[in-house]
Image (cartoon, rainbow, N blue to C red; front, side, top):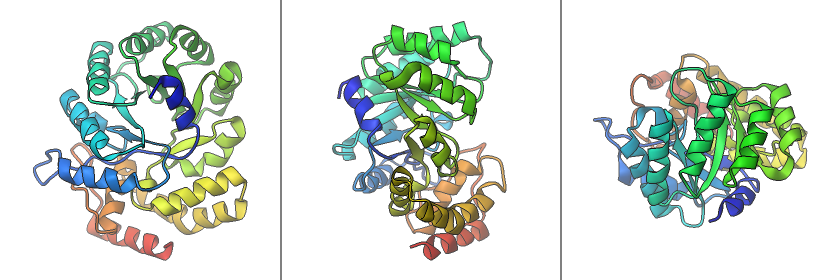
Length: 300
C-alpha cells in the first residue's frame, strides 16, 4: 500500500486501536491477540492501529512493537495495519524501520518522550522519522508534542510520505487552522479519548474520521455511531450518547489511566478477556466490569 493509498483508506471510514493482550505474567499473548485482531477485521474498519495508545505502546519494548505488528498483519487480511511509533528520534527511527520490515502499512507517530520541544525541534524530529521509512506517516498532536499549523504545513511540503494528522489536544482553534492551511494534502483523524464525545464538532471542522476505542468490544455500536455522525443523524447519536457513552464515561473517569483499562474491561465483560494491563496502569475492579457489562447488554 502506497502512502497515498493509505491516505485515501484512512479517510474512508472508522479507525480503531486493538488492545494488546498479555498473559498472567504480563508477557505478550500472541495467540489471543491474533484472535482479537482477526475478529475485529471482520467488521468495517478502514484501518487498525497496532501497538498504539490503547494498545499500550508506552508499556512495550521497541522489539515487542514489531512483534505485535507482525502478529496483527498475519490475521488482518485486507485491513491496513498502522503501527505506533515514538520516543526519542533515534529510537523512533529504529521502530519505524523495524515495523516497516514487519509489514506495517503506515506509522502513527506518537509524542516523543518526556520533554517539551520548540517547533523547529518538532519539525526536525518528525522529518527524520518520515525520511527513515517509505510507508505513510500520521503525526499525533498530543501532550508535549503539539505542532502548529505552520510546522505541519512545512512537514507536508518536505515529506511526501506524511499523509495524516491526528489530534488529541482538543484545541479547536489549532485544529481548524491546520485543516484550513493544509487542505486535502492530509487526511485528518480525531484522537481525543472516547472521541465519540467530540466527533460531531470535529466533523464540522473537516476531521471526518476518528479512532474508536470501544470498537474493541462493541464494534457494531461503534460503527452505528460513526455512520450516524457521517449522516447527520442526531437522534441516533443522542440515543447512543445517553444510553451508552455517558454511562461508560462515568466508569472511565474514576481513575487515571482508565481510558485504556476500561477497554480491556469491556472485552472482559463480553467474555473475550485480553489479560491485564501492564503497570503503571491498573485494571478495573470486578464491580466496575460488572457495571460495564450491564451497560453493554442494555445496548445490544
